Structures are given as structure tokens and as C-alpha cells.
Length: 89
Image 1 (spheres, rainbow, N blue to C red):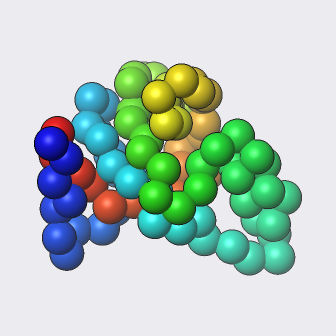
Image 2 (image 1 turned 180 degrees about the horizontal axis):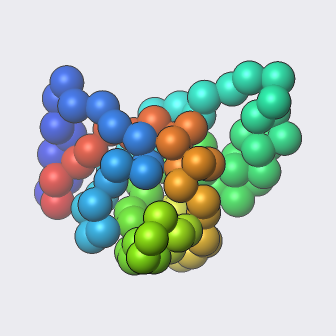
């Protein structure tokens, strides 16, 4: 059973490896419009589960699972634009 943790919001860059969350929204601006389209194209959309699998050393990219099958690597700077609602399994 999944339980939403109320009143706790974070970005993908703050999510610890092995923890699960739901995507709430992606920050948009004129500079990040292309990024938002790319992220939505790979499945990072509201209410989609997301989990950090690994975090590279020295601020390197995050290895992330989106949904149940898609795995990507994403820069910390890009991960800061993805806002999440943590959930407990």
C-alpha cells in the first residue's frame, strides 16, 4: 500500500536513492521550455511514480526510474526543476 506524505514537497535532486515519489509538476520558463518537452516525452508527467536508483559521486547525474520500466540519467540542475510528492510503500 502506498501512502502519500502530506505537506512534504521536494525536488528530484533532493530525493534519496531507493525512495519513491509522485511527480507534481515541472518548473517552466522561457529557457526551460525545450527541457520540459523532453522530460514529458520520456514520461516525467504529473502523478507518475519516480525513484532515484543511484546517485553519482561529486554531483554527477542521477540514475532514475520513471514509472515501472523507463530508466534515465538526469543532471542535478535538471532534477531541481522536477517537483515531487514523496510516498511511502
